[in-house]
Image 1 (cartoon, rainbow, N blue to C red):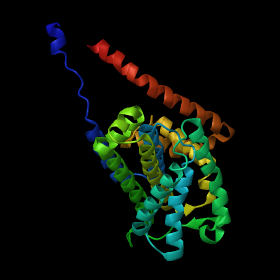
Image 2 (cartoon, helix red, strand yellow):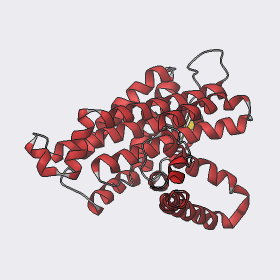
Image 3 (tube, rainbow, N blue to C red):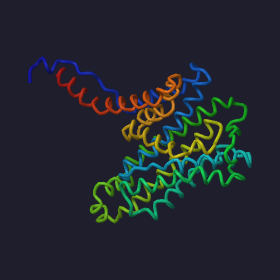
Image 4 (cartoon, rainbow, N blue to C red):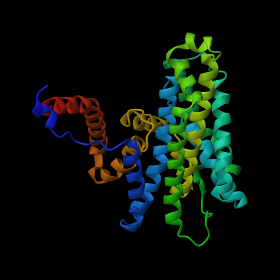
Length: 318
């Protein structure tokens, strides 16, 4: 190796933790610089980012794909909305309940479908998504039916609701990202990954893949319920139209766009693609589906080829 190559300065890469902290700092002060409509849109973006994480964790730790996570999101959303509308309870009370019910529903679904995988599991989750609007409409005495429910109880009385909706969604998103980062470093997380990649080895250590998949679905369902809860609170309304099969498909799209990442930047990319890209394309009329598809293709191609471009640049600068 020549002396010149040794003396050549190399660009410094920021550690992921520093990038995440800087991003959080920007998001905390952002409401001071943008208008009310953007605060609302970003709050919904954070909620969708939580939903993206719920699908990504199922792919990462379970090796499976779901197109029915709108069911678990609806469970969380209506848990918050019903307690708010019927009993006047704030998010501080309803959010833990939504998380608990989401986990229970995830486990309850995973148990009878524990032997299914691949396309068979995906189709079975689609059945959940197809059933959600009809279940909500047939329970109209509790759910409000087609008209839906309005979420209006503040978490902190006296603070503007717009800011509460924004910061509550950001706080829950940050908590989910932090919990998933701890899971990745924990023994339980390693066991789940081992059960997905090497089932025989996991069995040898006393962890059956069936039980690991049930646990992953429970975690994923709980996170999806948090997504629904924050969609209800950040969006202020809950209705059947927000939890259709298309909503579940878009959560999967957001997960693909984020490349199944479990970090805050990746989750925000997926959430922004679901929330902000349609808003930016809203003036395109009939071209919206075409432009949205092109944007989806462009993001996927960029994400696929960016590591290769970085490798070529680093080799050229070496």
